Image (cartoon, rainbow, N blue to C red; front, side, top):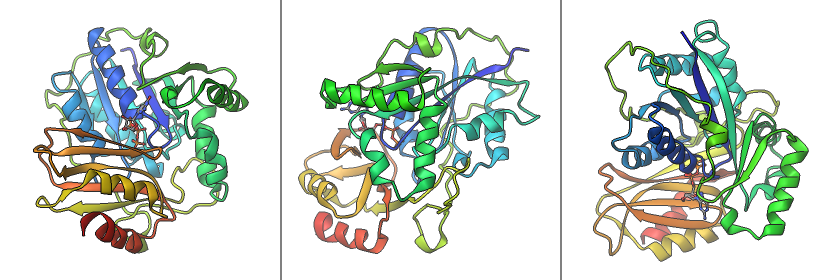
Amino acid sequence: MKPTPVIIISGFLGSGKTTLLLELIKDLNARNLKPAILMNELGKADVDGSILAESAQGLPVEKRFDGCICCSKKSEISGALQSLLDLAPDVILVELTGVANPEEVVDAMAEPELIDKVMLHNIVTVVDAEHVLEYNSIFSADKQLVYTLRRQLEVADVILVNKQDLVPYPHLSKVHHLIKKYNDTAQIFNTTLGKFNQEAVIGALRPLHHQAKTTVRFNIVSAHSHTHHPHHGSASSSRSEQPGHASFSRIQTIMIPISRQTALSLPRLTKWLKTTGQHVLRAKGYVALKGSSTPSLIQFSGKQLRSESTAYTGAYYLVMIGYELDERALLQEWQANVIA
Ligand SMILES: Nc1nc2c(ncn2[C@@H]2O[C@H](COP(=O)(O)OP(=O)(O)OP(=O)(O)O)[C@@H](O)[C@H]2O)c(=O)[nH]1
């Protein structure tokens, strides 16, 4: 039996991985290829899962959300991959968290129970064209994170310089220069919203005609996460200073639950996210906005906030992702600046 190809999508927080994943799913569907998806997410809320559920409706997508890829637990990764294999997909797409090293998945694929069943098709790393040049200086004190970000570039077969719409051309060439310093063999594409000629990534894939071992379809399974840092409560992080395969570093997540009765002012929320002294790199979640009758998906990355109306039906919350976050201060600021 032919091994099932695996495509790994990596890239720092907010670079555009889920946006790319949705583009790949569309294209695979157009080619009559059935993908299965393994994704995990920082924090306790499965925002990407909800986006996927809404955007990929009707597509032959299977999703498994229980592999904690952040901790190099090979058994968890390989367990999740094996469950997906039972569905006989033509390709497995793995979307990593923004602070994960793709090598962890590659390592897990080399475990005895998987080695003959899966093969690495390619690693695609998505780069945020607007911010990638700043990362080394912002995170200079965090060796683990700098190492992970470097490995995301070094091990990639294809690198997307995404968000090209937000930067002038000379900036793009500086980004290419940086990438080539770490990887001069990867194919590089400049993209906006993850759109490019996907032939380079999925062109060689063919239907596998494998027999599914189960008819159980994995839908959106509840988000799995855990606390890396007990004293942070809902925050997740670990502080290994030793570069290695483990991905986490000082990046933390803080989940802000929001009552269903609270409608937020978009201008106030935007102002606060842009001006808070906390080191917030990314925020996302579902909220009620004043003047809108449906829940809104909030996406804050690269100091830009986007909101879009959705058919989401779950509890409201905002996940804040950043470094050196002071949870108490952040929640106080939230109350004072957004809620009060
Ligand atoms: N202007 C612009 N925005 C983009 C582009 N690609 C993605 N975005 C937006 O950037 C935000 C983050 O995109 P995602 O695809 O969720 O990024 P991600 O890498 O999956 O994020 P995490 O999973 O949180 O690490 C969303 O609001 C996207 O709509 C782009 O090319 N240009």
